[in-house]
Length: 239
Ligand code: SAH
Image 1 (cartoon, rainbow, N blue to C red):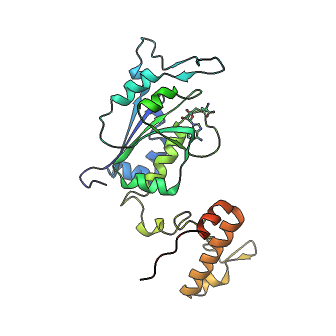
Image 2 (cartoon, helix red, strand yellow; image 1 turned 120 degrees about the vertical axis):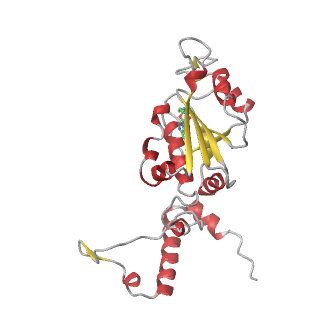
Image 3 (cartoon, rainbow, N blue to C red; image 1 turned 45 degrees about the vertical axis):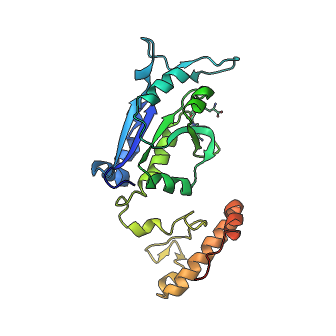
């Protein structure tokens, strides 16, 4: 991040009132109030070319639903100064979002995200403005706003100073390519279930080994895709 500028998010949406929404609370909300990041939600409708504020039209070739207009979206995007921030389109057909991409975005100056609605956006807009299509998972939402909120939440917590303990980001799921190990806290026994003995024994080496083994077991059982990638990862060269 350029240290003179805060991390900036600009969202293009027909529902600007959905922002900051849940990001106005908790960690992200405190960081927003503390100017560790900024959020602008622009109303796409303000860039409509007719008096009715039309942003969509019927699909060429027929079919159900409506398509967001390339000309209106281009005007909305072009009203944002080109400052090198990545321009994303929230899209069910985009590349699935990963923690690695999130970390990359969090290290930059921020992002511009366009939220689709209806059946999506005119394909020519995506090509003409070189938008990066990002999906938050293999399911279909009714709009890009909740996807953008999820993306922002994931990015903002990685901005330096946002998380209480800087270290708590380092060990969690996906960082090392494994799912996170199980967590426990008091009471020592819950409905007859004790905390695993190794965690209360005070041997840090044993705790570390147990956590690593559990993370590996869970990843093997639940995410064969991640496990395969983990097993074939390049080993760190010995120095
Ligand atoms: N007809 C489209 C779905 C449109 S849903 C299709 O079948 O792919 C309307 C909008 O919701 C999309 O334009 C996109 O901005 C957003 N959206 C839906 N699912 C999403 C997902 N999994 N990730 C990110 N954005 C999504």
